[in-house]
Length: 199
Image (cartoon, rainbow, N blue to C red):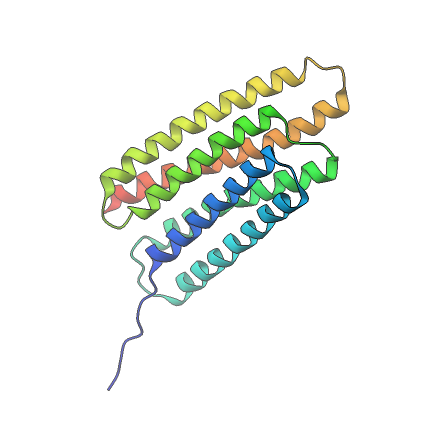
């Protein structure tokens, strides 16, 4: 007797990905407070784990004819969520390359980014059925992006009170990674709002 192949649990895999991305940003927070080699390596490990989950999701999308969410939306959401983890690791990598420690401005921005990652996780956890929760949390994420962007510009302004041009350029690059990550978080929130409108 013919049996239909079970459809992948897209919501479940997306939740796993969002959890791992949240864990990656949390590891970056820990690194900002305690910049040990072990804490830096943990960010890299978590980012790679997040990548593996994303690969699973993309593979499932490619092999499934019908998905619970528009295929393009699902792919773009997964990509944008993953970008947060990518920027977290890039931040640690470049701190090491430039041989500079995380400073208080970076730590404050990363703390906001963690709240964004936590908000996105709540959105994804409720995406299947509790759309009012998604709508509420997506708005919070977008407000946090504005807060982080303001903190970014304040931090850049503070940098330029120094006469050390090389340090200014190094830290500006580092701060930009976190700011770009927040832009991706904002994009995720927009996508989530768009997805629930389609239901």
